[in-house]
Length: 423
Ligand code: HEM
Image (tube, rainbow, N blue to C red):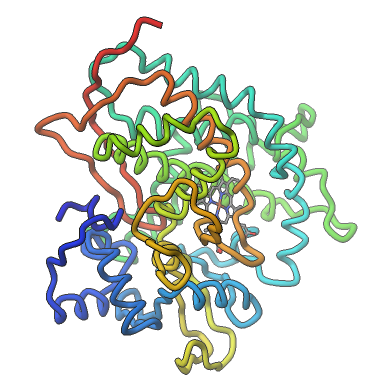
């Protein structure tokens, strides 16, 4: 079974016996290739026989796999704190804002940035988004081969957040991307300590960069970017501390590009492996209502975040399991999204699925702030890409390379195109 089969969950024939599955659950980790390669087989077993499964990795934690349990846990922020939000933790001493903030502070932070990410505000950037996608495709046009992960999936969401929201100059995009990838995609071969050290160093580099941007705005005048907005904003009559502004940026950039990049890269791989999916999408891409439904279904089927962590704040019983203060939970969105108790035919892509209460964007107070932006990116991408880019296959002799970590996606996608049309 290839990594892609296990992650997208299309393989139907099990390659593992019961004791191998139990062993993989005991060693479950979002950073492990073994976990990723067998993900949907493990999720199915966890939902069936151990919905609060215990993994011994990263100091030990419980993984929630059933839709209802994941949903309920996401709606108990008092009992299940979001700090730290990853397993293992990044190691930051104070919570990242807003994703690691708990009630009551969390609400203030959300209010601060709610306007910039509202449906109306996001809709207003559609023309820029379309130009951006067109430029990415123009750069690709006519080539025989390309790495679609590097040349399409990453640049689109990266430019959207860095250029449209933060006003970061183009010369710095790659440097910031590399720093953030150190944090988001830890080396599966390195120890937790080594990865934590690398991620802390990258975090400090990015903080320094945003500190210089903030200083520049204060000296040379505010613009229309988010850093300018945050520096002038007030929460309960108080201005944000500089560290809070940097904290926002440290979350917004990776949350804004790595998630969408992972969905795009996986979708681009699926177009090569499942041409019929591409045909189905081509048939509806000009119908906005059908396209909206299709985008939701794609996020259900290939949610980029395999899971987020919660920290138990008090002794309690949850889903039949006794939990102690300090226990760690992992909420497995992709498993919840394939729970047959919630979704009929969960392993099938049903582009007009309704209802579709998927958890790909999370749920509860931390529900994705950038969901409207992500939806717009995906819609504009599908429209422009499917109209202009010819069909392609993975280049013979090469293969797609997946990454593990706090998002799961394809980091290398070497493809060979069929002929480009003249226009
Ligand atoms: C397809 C793309 C995306 C997916 C599937 C996705 C998914 C998620 C999920 C599952 C959460 C919940 C985390 C939790 O419960 O702890 C979340 C939170 C968040 N997302 Fe996204 N995301 C995407 C794109 C974006 C974009 C484009 C942005 C741009 C700003 C963004 C910003 C955030 C932020 C700031 C949070 C934290 C919200 C809070 O704590 O209140 N995301 N996202």
